[in-house]
Picture 1: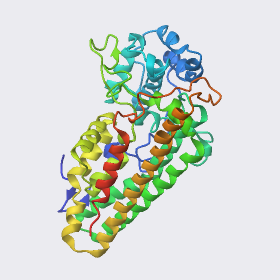
Picture 2 (picture 1 turned 30 degrees about the vertical axis):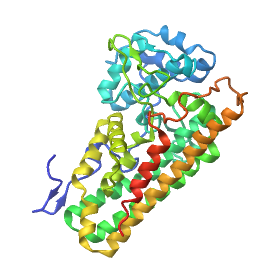
Picture 3 (picture 1 turned 60 degrees about the vertical axis):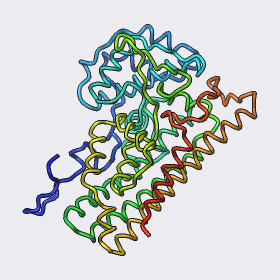
Picture 4 (picture 1 turned 180 degrees about the vertical axis):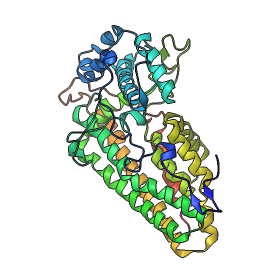
Length: 409
């Protein structure tokens, strides 16, 4: 890409808008649409009643009766994003309706064909991703009210009741808390290009504060998402068909491919935010973790993936600070690394509660509690893996440790 700094005119042209990143919403989709054109009413009817259809084992039969709709009546990015969200959630419900041991192996053409077309138009894979269930799956109850838990709801709900909705909403709040940090990355790169140490110090301080706010937002999860429901219900409907023992060969998309396709499920690694911060700060992970994180970039909107790549290309913050001998810069940098390490530590503690401990409780309690729904399912084959397909604790601890190792002494 062209240079982001015009030395002659001292004009920095690296900004967020060129990557479709909002100053007000960060990587969140601003004001997502809630309805599609009338032609797509059959999709909406199913997407907005997923819980009942799955609970009553009727979703697959309703999907099989869908007309084959094409995407030429979808206009603009936001309609495509809503269509992808709806078709993604319908697909997850279709595949997992009968539980992990009876997963559907074939996605019928009346769902597979338009889903593939929408995905191709957006540059996203045909599977539920973070860009769907978090970035584009929120609405305000009071349009004039604040962006906070009690004023937010999901557009499409997966099984799991309030816990499922709150899981996505709290994750959206974490993305919201990251917005000052995203702006700080922009400011920091521009300061680096201009050689302005004072602005770079402030940018690093702002980034550290934003990461701390992300951790505080994540803490809300404990009060609003039930670990048993997350482990027993929600997690299954986030699981994909790559590195998944429940669907070892992948999913056949009828009239799209002659062979089954394999895609990872939803994962926090698909969030552009933390990968952007890692690139800006020069945090280098082990090859195995880096390979997985790089693969997860293909599950992001292409413009967001391009943003990470541009940050990587332009940011030499770590090398610059190491050679500068500026105590203020070093201190501010270490604040960022410490905040990032603490966020990742907290994520590990959450995974311990919501997956490791929850799995142990399910094993100990052979008679599963229903929590008001018959959707409770024991994820035995998925127990040690994240929804993205990784060995989750080993991955998270490795990423945490390489973050800690970036501290400057």
